[in-house]
Image (cartoon, rainbow over all chains, first blue to last red; front, side, top):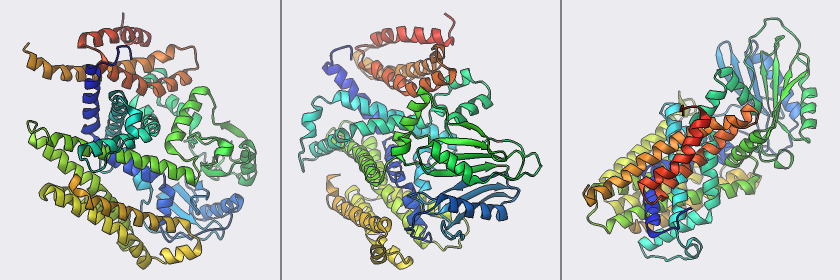
Length: 506
Length: 91
């Protein structure tokens, strides 16, 4: 800073911190919470589709690809494209998508037997992922702008918070229990400072993920034509070329040879997706991209390497372009997505994300405890913030847990089942908001946190009753994903009950 | 202007100035990077990657400056430079 940090500067920074921190903090809490869950996107999908078999054998990509080819040749002839996602460490099934004459189709295959696996209709972990940058029910573009504004306010709140804070490190080692406002302040500082580099990184890189939407002016000036902008995108992302079908049938080269070529190019890294446009046509193209999450071979970039082939001649047409600015972009994107992380790394990501939720929650509670001591301020503002705090900090977790309940309880043959799981979540959130508006504040906190705790506590029981993958079975089978889901539910239930007991402090 | 009104008006003006100047500086900087002697797509991506830092730094500056006047004075040189190089404003 140019000027010495006088008292006035600090006051203005505190003011900036208060307002940028408050205005969209509820939205940010929902974004942070669902974003944190998104680090376990695949794992949550696995839990939400218990029909997926628990696989332990090592999967050969060539064999898996053979199954995929056989299925697609029978079921998706004449499709304009095929997308094959090969099983990786986190997702055991072959996942197929195609754009056929009768619309979009999809299927899941067992990677060893090649049989179709029927899974329940649910958005799974993808819901949390989508919600955390484009919300739900809102026009996508509008929602993404809203999330962007919230993220920029978060970035400003972080920077102004650091400047406001005089003794950032002394205070970090200070905690005053049971002292009302001081305790909330200490907790807020703890959550913020402890994970400050993470908060700054995740907020900035989050903005970077949608930078072409938020900062389009340079792009528009340099590349006025949409095709030119598309070119830039396909420099770094594995985009299937949209080319017309010629209509002349031609045999495609065996994919296994292209697979071997790609693996040799990528230091032996596994292939993740194979996309084919105009399969079986003279104009067939194939895009082979690496599986995310092999940092020892591929680094941490959010743009996994890919190769585009002519599928009839096997000629290599182009690969991912590596240039300095693209590398910086890929690194920032990779840091946000965290797909490079192995399981301890993912848990670390999740813990830091949880610290972010804690920072937002304690910041909001601090705002109300401070305001209550200043009787000359607007009563309505205080009432509104108090109620929104309750409906978001306690109500949104209740709604999220409901999603898992509905996932187990809704009939499997229900029409639009996946949508109703999500409608259920928002109906429950709405109910929590109404509850927060009419109940006395302390009772409201106790009841909503208690409800969240109860729902979490019973979730392992529900899972035991409705599937054959309850805690005893998953423990015996060594199915750590299901075991850790149940244990985490119990742990979080304990946390909710503890908060409910201490609820008066809110 | 009475002191009390000024006390309330000042943060509002700062906020408006912060939003407007941060928007313009980000916009201009994302275009001005095209003048760098780099491949076009590299400059474009760099401009986008740095844009959020430009935005945040501008807002923080507007709130750090001692007065609205000094905030404006501080914004002037980068604004003129970036506007010129982005060729969005004829100078």
